Amino acid sequence: MSDPVKVFDPFYTTRPVGQGTGLGLSMCYGIIEGHGGKISCRNRSEGGASFVIELPAAVSVSADKAQAQAHAAKL
Image 1: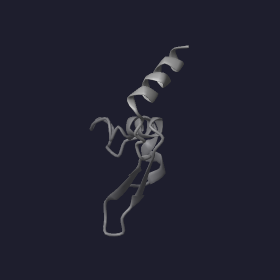
Image 2 (image 1 turned 60 degrees about the vertical axis):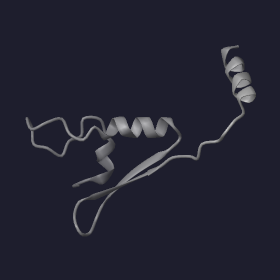
Image 3 (image 1 turned 180 degrees about the vertical axis):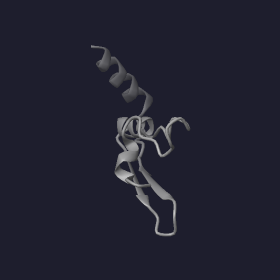
């Protein structure tokens, strides 16, 4: 990747004009960030690129607590 930081910009592509729409990584970035996570990209010394996705651990909540939270959100 010529600029690993830019791969998450909307409409960024590694392809020549007229050869496709690119990687769609801006959508991935939005989904991951929306779930409290992070995504990063770096070039590998042996070639290619490496992506790291970090997501927060899920927290188990009881059904009663989940229902109370859902009810409070409606208010």
